[in-house]
Structure formats: structure tokens, C-alpha cells
Image (cartoon, rainbow, N blue to C red):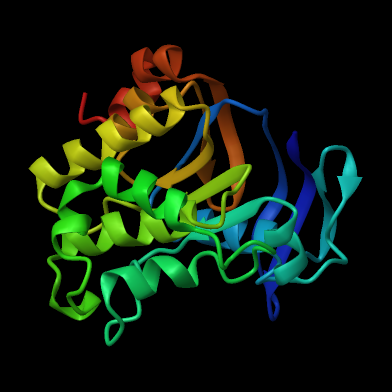
Length: 234
């Protein structure tokens, strides 16, 4: 299990996360829903060790990992698909995917994993030799997710995967998340798009101004009058 307990994070004197408590069990899709600047990206960056916590613990399988560097956390099974995609624009699609396997001991034997990613995203296979910078926004997001999967993570952290994408592509990304869940991939999904998040996840946490204010099964939260008012336009 991935677990955050009493997590505080500061940027200088500004406290961004305030006692965040969150768990993700193997096989779950858990959504972290909140408005822009609620602290979602900071939460994921802290899990991966890209940002240090001021207090609290990050545990993986019961063992605290907050003293470990990011490469070791990746080797232990965490992978982040960052906000804004951040693909290597001058590298080809296939080169970008290979970069996702950089920390794997078997990174010279990834043909089977490439085939799996291309089966999930046929458009990437069609464009495997194209420069990533020439892809559409939706295709770049597929590439970013595929690159994350190439790390063979136990926990895939998705940060705002639908940000700036057309509604039809948002639907595709939601379907991809559900397909990955069906394959047993464990996902922590950080999203402003509450409707997609609740539809794609098993459980959800609502993050407001750095605090978890609501949590529970996604289907129940989606029916909550407060959630409808704040996030679903109801």
C-alpha cells in the first residue's frame, strides 16, 4: 500500500499541504480531486521525492520512503506522468518510451513492453518514428502515459492528464485509465475534471486549500450535493 500520513509541505513560508492523509491499495484507482492550486501536484511530487515534506511520512508497503531519492523511489515501483506532459520534443516517440525504462535493470529488453504500449495506443505505433514535438496534445498525453508505463510501475501517478485537451480526448483518456485498471495497474489520479475522475476511479479524495475535506467511494461522492455544487455544476 502507498500511504501518506500527516503530510505537511511548505514552499518557503507558505504551507501548501496541511496534514494530508491518503492511501492507495494495490489494484485501486484513487482520484485526488481539487481546483487549481489546491495542492494536487505538490502531493504527487512529494510522493516521488521531487519535493520534501516538512512533516509527516510517505510509506510504501509499510516502510517510510521520505529519506529516499527519486531514482530509488522509481526503482521501488513509483512512476509519475507529470502535468503538462513534458515529453522530449526532439526525440522520437519510440525514444521517449525507451526513456521511461531508464531506471529498469532490464532496460535493454523492453520490446515486449513497447508492444504493450503500442497495443494500448495504436496511434503511437503509427507515429513511432516521429518527433514527439510534432504530435497533437492528445497524442503527447498518450505518449506521456506510455512512457510512465515503460517503468513497469506498481503505482502510476497521473497529474492532470486531461488538462487542456478537447472533450473527445478527455473521454479517451478516461477510457484508458479504466482499461489500465482492468489490467491491474494501480493509479493515483490528480485531476480538476471531477466528472471524469469519479467515473474512472474506485475511491476519491477532495483536496481544498491543501487539506483533504472529503473522501469515500467515487460513486457516492459524485452524488453528494456539495460535490455537485462545487465541481459538477449541479
